[in-house]
Length: 168
Image (tube, rainbow, N blue to C red; front, side, top):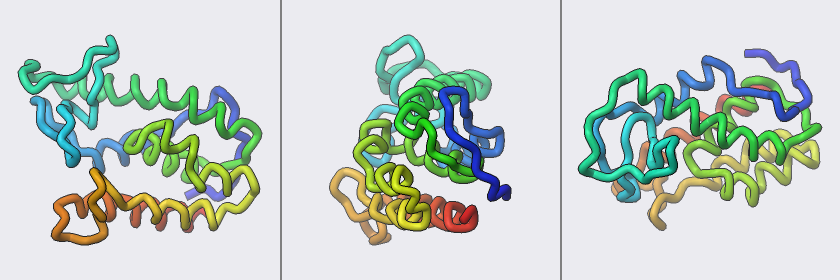
């Protein structure tokens, strides 16, 4: 894992290993299903198709290739907002991938108002990593409590935190 930091620009992109990480953690389901907060989802966490239509439970099955295309489309769309929020902030590729994965899961709005972003802009990299652990809720349930049926959200945050700390 490279600890070399590069300045984030509008052209900075998630790595192939970052895409694979997101796919492995989101999981890929080729038929519509309800996610942990009850939203109709398909593929690798897709809730809205690239054409802007929301996923419906009655939608047809998709292919693995489509699932990957939808994921890349949404990550690239999110990256425009994400990158703009971090212009001039030095990050390693590992840090970039971790925070981009967070943004894919929780959204650009959550990212833009997060203490992670505030800490990164202040050069407080360890505190930014630690801020990941604040994001343990889904549908007002504390996902660090296994019986709340969203424990995977917490496990993913702990893994992100570990990767982030490892990049310091």
